[in-house]
Amino acid sequence: MTVDFGRAPGRRALGGFAFGIVIASLAAAGPASAKTFKSGPFRYVSSGVSTGAGAQGELFSVCPSGSRLAGGGGRIGGAADTVRLGSIAPVSTDVDGDEDDGYLAESFNNSASPVRTTAVAVCLRNGKGGSQLLYNLTVGTQINNGASVGTGVNVNCVGGRLVGGGILIPGSATTDSSERLNSSHPRDTNGDRIHMEGWSGSMNVTNNNGFGISPRAYAVCLPGGKMRMRYVYKTKVVWPGTTAKVKAKCPKGFRVSGGGSHGFFTRLVASVPFDNKDKRKAPDNGWRVSVHNSSGGDPRALLAHAICLKPK
Image 1 (cartoon, rainbow, N blue to C red):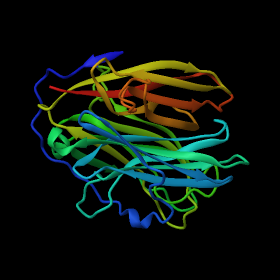
Image 2: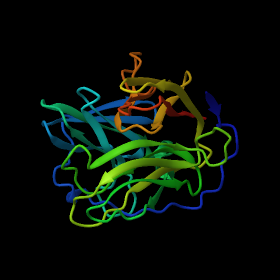
Image 3: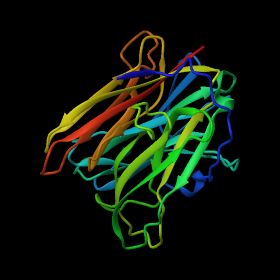
Image 4: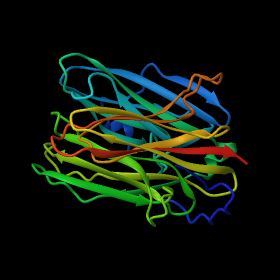
């Protein structure tokens, strides 16, 4: 399904709010083998790192100078029934209070061999709307040390319309069950099937960090005027014990700024922009999601979301 929301007048920006995450505290994180792809007003920065057997992977991609983060995603290689993502979220590398500098991916490799973890940042040039982006954050209910819970967290745009987002589970994953991100996706709050109001995520967490942690939901929002926006999603039924890969494609002339995976899956393997091998060579054509349904019960529905933008 595609929804065009580009011709409606933009709502007045009321401002954003955020709590900074200082990347220096992520001792294992960092950009590695980064590649930057240019596509119109966007820059797509992809970084990868090897993740050892039985280990957590953690890295981030940083936006180039003159741009700010619009969205992003992550993926982990290997067999889908042995790996998973833990967090995919915006990050800050400074102290300005906005998670506008890059995008983080955390993973866990439960296989016997090394695999690759990738983080992709989608960045919008300041003169093309990047300077107008608003960053919104909700801090969820605290998960006490030693607790094992299933929980979720949501955030709404405060001014503007959604262009990207993410979910962060703080702390470290020491086992395959420590941090399981089940979903991270655009949010529809009024039932009109236009997922533009904010961001939502669900997770299962076993907290062995030695202190309480609170999951965080981020929504990156853009006031009207600069861009036409289209919200696309594609659905698929995922049977128990199987892996599904779904692509939500942007309409011609639009470039993807963000996207997500909507559904309850114990193994979210990939939620990233993709390239359809056109002449631009950039991963700007839509959003790709990969999940594994490890439940022994009923089939589950998957929605792959793409948020697509085009300068007016």
